[in-house]
Length: 225
Length: 170
Image (cartoon, rainbow over all chains, first blue to last red; front, side):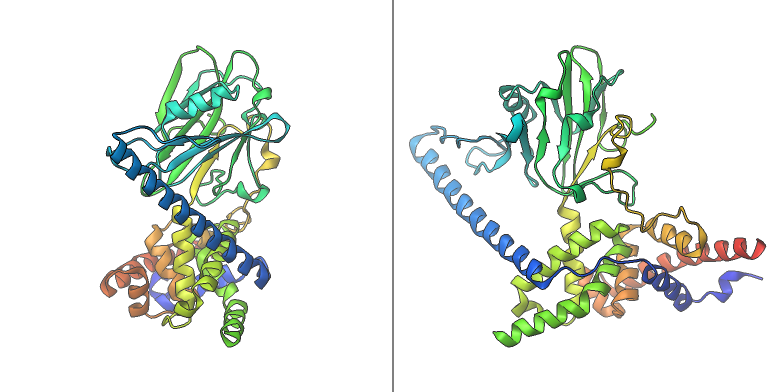
């Protein structure tokens, strides 16, 4: 007997339907919550357009005046690397002082943050860091405390385990508690941004120790390795 | 305008669950899907005049939710478990196969299908879309949709057969 013969496409799809239908699903959020989310998105888009328009004006001024740099915003913000001299530089990341002495790092999707600029901005907030783009570096020894005592992804629901089994999160500020980094220890931050996906990883490393850098995401340290 | 609001409210109430199940089937994560679908409905509300005229509004929501997921950042906290912070990780239990059994095996097999095959199956199973509508939604040829569906079903059938055989042997 061949079971395959007995399972036509409809039976297979029905089995899939039954399997998923058997899973408990979260209740629908309130309609007002959906509308509020929509309104927030509309505000963000309007604000983004305003920033883009301001950026376009700034770029125009740069062109007319022969390249004088535009003033940086009060918050430390890093531009994406310049690909063309006349390109509009959107903010690729921000580093800001948070509550309780923490520092908030935000990387914006769609732009590649300059790792040196990120490192320098973090250093100005007292956070020693090794920042790499496209690779992730660690030392042979992972010093105490755990990286979880130093880095927090805001929002409890943002840490999830999808199909690949790794904890992941959707965008949100990264809160770094620099006071929890002991002397002789640095925070290693590696990120990768491409058209398919963006990923950022963290660990603690020993300052000055040899590092092993591997590409993201496949070869980074995982539990138990 | 009021009629449009009422329409959207009815659409939202009636479509939340099927859309969520379709996205769960495609993404493999209930938590991730919940956020993506909520975002998609928020966008549908913003563009309701356009979406309400769409030939398959639920498919619009699902497709938007999947696009939202593709554009979100993936972030990893490395070595958190080593640092004793397992409690901070909220495991998404829904599609784990830990409980064993037919459903778990089938869901695991679904999870391991290529993304496009999962999308096609999700749209077919949970939104009852025909090949042409799926084709239009995903922007791929109907023949390609059929191929994805056929390969996906073949893989799932294999898993289903194995699981049924194992259960019969017990």
